Length: 458
Figure 1 (spheres, helix red, strand yellow):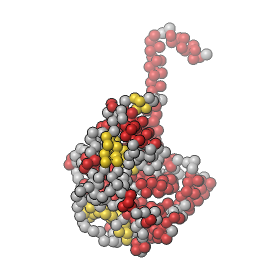
Figure 2 (cartoon, one colour; figure 1 turned 135 degrees about the horizontal axis):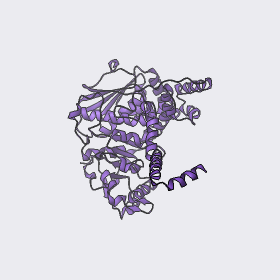
Figure 3 (cartoon, one colour; figure 1 turned 180 degrees about the vertical axis):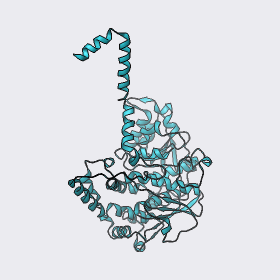
Figure 4 (cartoon, helix red, strand yellow; figure 1 turned 90 degrees about the vertical axis):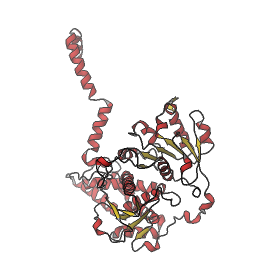
């Protein structure tokens, strides 16, 4: 009744009507979808939960511990016990209804590991190609030393080949260790490109070593894993070597890191089989051929790749036939993904949406090269459905991780103008653009897609 009387009364007074209309509009704007989403993200990701940055997977912040009832303390004690035994799947059952960002202090880090490490294990085999690569560009003789969270580079126990040109101190990931991994690889790779380093020296656990091994694999460099001061990691590697089929999640990562590192310094390095159980039984040269790659974008030229590729250009009106004839991969350029030809409506979706859906239907891996744009925002829906993404910024890498869409996705960002921690370069010396030229960027994405190519082009 009061509301009806207010409405009728205001209708007779134009000035009062205008005043209340403005108040109602202002009130409604507080519930605007974009504003609400931004406020929620600020609340959830603010301070302790900031997304990964170019300095590492997460800001090195320490949320305040809060008092908990006895039942909660007992639950977290059990979770901690399971994590210490590498029984992360069982620990997930105790945390299934909780979200990591709701936890405080060290519990947040534990929750991030409980969900992140198993997810990283699931996609670990997607991080490496079938064989070592030639150098992406001419590499120097320097070494980048990478220290796991909490380790001091002054405690080097092994031999570092060449001059140490840079040191990377990784910070702890307070949220998802799986999402943090790509940020680590991205940072390590940028350091190597900026300093012309040709090798990496990893100190610490298997995740640190795996990040260095991935960076070395993509660039065609080498990596050394020093775990002589980490008994727990060395024991996990030893257990995984003895029985790889029953290895824990971290054990599998240790095995992958050990196999792809050019040298592993520990008591168990001598018994490390560099081949996986399946690879040991497959005659890979018989599988090598010239892969057929679909290209969307006039900027893409596969004739410059180090190993031969058979490129076929897809057009907006004939793309379906090209995919159905069989592709080993699909490469999309950022400018093409923004062009009107590919963003034109096609039923309830765009032409490019339909292309990606068709490629997914035929199990064709998809790569997006968009490192020279200002932001990934306009093509983010396509990027989230790609298997490999070369993004314009480190913050874009953090936004891509949605394992519900593409569980095997890998992403990196190599722009010059990203903050680089303890880099010796001054901000004024940094140039705008990518650290890679067009042929190098294309080669990197091909490596990230793990295309099984024949020998190097001659």
